[in-house]
Image 1 (cartoon, rainbow, N blue to C red):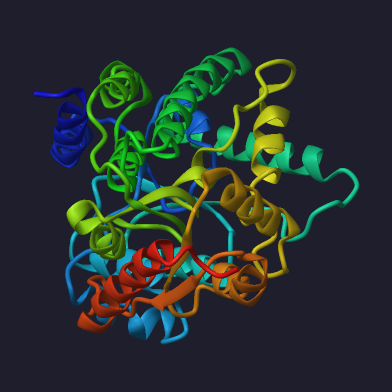
Image 2: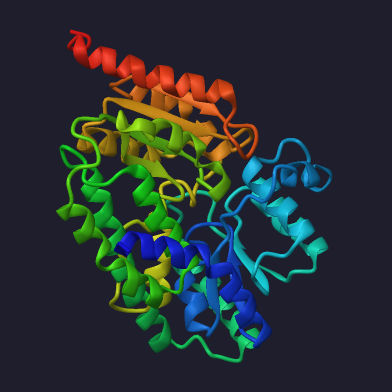
Length: 379
């Protein structure tokens, strides 16, 4: 078994292991929002962080309509609708107030019987004292969670968790770099398999299982000799929302050589500062997120990340995979179109699975990019 296959198998079996741990009295904190609150705080408080990715069955979004309304995104409706039937393998939830829809979902989760912790994330940037205020908010969350677990989230425990988290981020960045090579040594699917495992597994297990993956990928033959290079952008890619990526990379004709998504490069980011107050370091890391800190305003940081990634990746096309009512990302589409120097395809997926129309549009997009390459592209 390859290192990547072993990592996938461990992630696939994680839910059963967590439920067994809960039966023995372990606290497991479900995290629907990347980075907020930081999983390092959960670890420091003696609990297990678990990224909520599964969108549930085909009817999950319908079940949540009454609680959230039709203007809630599929991500929120899918997570809540799945929990209405069976709790995820967690004992409580913790999330930042990333957007109005997410806040409504957290309020509605009370009906499922799961306790919910919320962390107030700043809605705009550049306010004096913002970093210290967010650090204090993180301290309050750590204290509340420590009361529940009985384990104080001391600065020493938090600093150790940050060091482990940074080591995991370096593995993700190394894998991200492999898909940007010419030809790519990793596919977008393989990169997101790593990201998925990073969210589901304890950081110690991820480090042990994932450390060999970048070297393994780099040493093999390229998956495809000369694929069309595509930049993928948009909101979180849940387990049930990776159809667009699978369609794009089917047959090896195209590879998502880079992404600017909330579950990919935006969720890992750069290292958390390891010197000084660890809560201030985590606040600094959160405020650097291009979308999370300013979801309802045009985000210059997000646009700069998109433009820089487009240049660095050598992408020949951009695929924006969106979901209806995801305002933080959907509101940026007009600006991204203007910034893009290559063909730009926008799709919106209504349900957990891609429609036939989505498949047709992505396949036609790949054909167009291949034809454009053969013709030498526009002058």
